[in-house]
Amino acid sequence: MELIWKRVQQAAKESMDPDCFQRWIAPLRLIERRDRAMVLSCPNAFFREWVEQHYRCKLAQAFRKATGQDVDLEFRTEATAEGRAERNEVRQTRFAQVSSSPLWDSGLNGNYTFERFVVGPSNEFAYSASLEVARSPKTRYNPLLLLADVGLGKSHLSCAVGNHIMVNAPQQRVYYITAEGFVNEMVQALKGKKLDLFKEKFRRQCDVLLLDGVHFLSGKAGTQTELAHTLDALQNSNKRIVLTSSLLPQAIPEMEPSLRSRISCGLVVDIKPPDLITRCRILHQKARQEGVELPEPVVEYLAHKVTENVRQLESVLIHLLAKASLLHRPIDLELAEEVIRDLFHELSLPRKPTVQEIVECVCRYFRIEKESLVSRSRKKAVYYPRQVAMYLCRQHTDATLTAIGKAFRRNHASVIHSLAVMQRRCRVDSTARNQVAFLSEQLLRSR
Image (tube, rainbow, N blue to C red; front, side, top):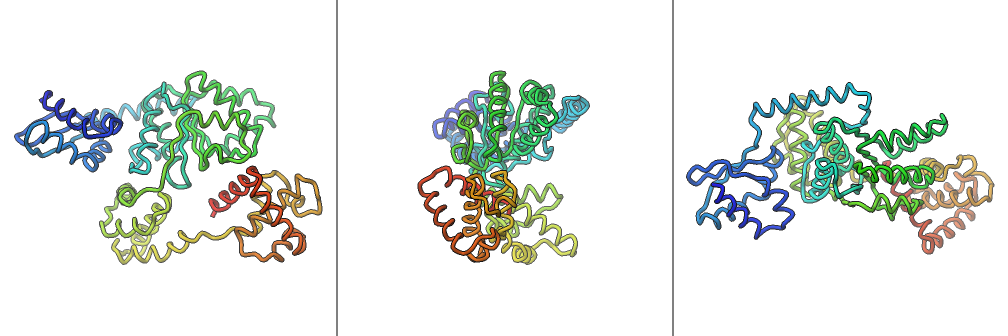
């Protein structure tokens, strides 16, 4: 049987991409042969499902080439029920040990695991890279930067790395934090004159750093410098680092070159929106987690209608299940169509930001007071942000020039002048262009 399996592996290897073979075929084992039936063992349930769906035909062809006959393939997981129970008990014991330790302050979302992440062509590379980082203390992919738009799973994968390590290597000190949280902790440390404790926490008391949303650090020079030193310290100690961002490092405005080079020197992996088949699998999995089996026509209908991101799929599913439960209605195509009618306009056409929201966003970014922004001041630190805000108001709202001028205590002519200045500046000044693009994206993401 071992000889047959070696021949099958060789036949499969000749017809497949080497990376795919090593990732999905090499871990399989031929454990039983019954006439024409061949039973293959898979490491886990997710692995079994993926191989059955994507590589059954290739394996059948490889068996035909190696044995000269057609075979019926069966796939099983390695774990028996007893083995699974033992592993669960070990995992619970490890969690109990870690949670009672003073080091336990991971900040992880326990629901974000590799088992709950639905893999498809759009995210397979990111999933595999994250799993490699989680499994290997001395990974080559350090730091790993997960790049994705909102709602596509970058935070899920980041937390999954941490959760996997906490279960399988509980002695490791894992810390998950958003970039905003990192900034806030540093500010508090400076105010309390406890910067040494802050550095100790992130540089010497951390084995795995998971930093979510590094694009938030745009314009925060002091924090960027501290983070660059922290990444240096962790890398020099062979500690694992996983970062997430909505923007490429070179596209993040006002990012220190030293930090930009550090966060992009490892592996940068892009996550794209899920395709139709993956969206269907996501809906099935999320529904099963709620104890519901969705009819296939409902799944296909929702997957065709909601294409933007996973978070929108979850929103539609929650709405569907809630309506079915509260109104005591069956989950059918008619109910799904009602849910889409209720939500689709909102999902497809996000509400535009208001002038006031743009003013607040610009003030936060440039760190100036609203009263200064709308004052008569001609200082560069004030008038340039004011021009940016006017330009964004013209781009992202339906407000008239007169209304924009009123919001900034300016007349119609002043608004026209500011818009013309910003148009010219964006054409010739990459910094201004990146700032406008960044602020525009922040405004759209908040809808």
